[in-house]
Length: 183
Ligand SMILES: CC(C)(COP(=O)(O)OP(=O)(O)OC[C@H]1O[C@@H](n2cnc3c(N)ncnc32)[C@H](O)[C@@H]1OP(=O)(O)O)[C@@H](O)C(=O)NCCC(=O)NCCS
Image 1 (tube, rainbow, N blue to C red):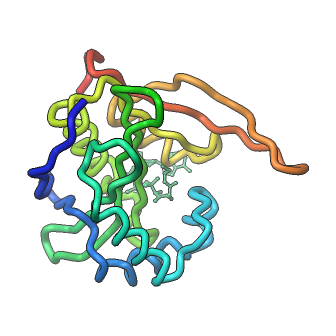
Image 2 (image 1 turned 135 degrees about the horizontal axis):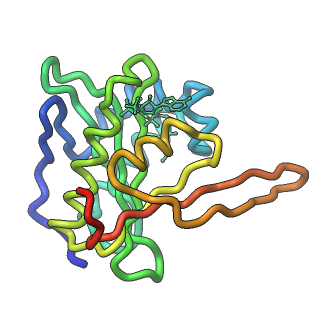
């Protein structure tokens, strides 16, 4: 796997994926603070300052570089509106495995934006960064997230149970291998 120091943007029919910038923090904070969105992701802090600090920290990393997430903001081409964000991170201690994450603002969900953005991200991970495996985790009851993973060619690999105090929940791991037939 390699890092892409030249990364500029990924373009799809309707979207542009570009490095998140500090000035995106207000918009991203607003949708991450939505209880329905935050419930599925479990970010500890979604206030503007924390989101901005995360973006600034990630700005120092190159996509594909081990050591943490890099985030791209997803902009709609027709009006330049920031509609969501996606992230990519090498998995610790597993060479060739790249994790992806994705969020779309609730008011524009259900229009295929996540599928379109994540499909471009998966192609970038495999074709440009040379990933052997692209992986996404989701709560087992997060049907829309699982549907997006399936639509970009990922398959269920593992279901695991997690406990914290009295709380128990299931996490599913979806993966697409470089040599998979469907792209
Ligand atoms: C998951 C998420 C990114 C999907 O964004 P989106 O832009 O609405 O996704 P798309 O429109 O590309 O596709 C959603 C698919 O899920 C399906 N879906 C949505 N809700 C569903 C439900 N309750 N049950 C089954 N399928 C559902 C849609 O029908 C669509 O599939 P289809 O095209 O076959 O009809 C968005 O819901 C989100 O940000 N959720 C909160 C954060 C999150 O869970 N992120 C994923 C964890 S990494």
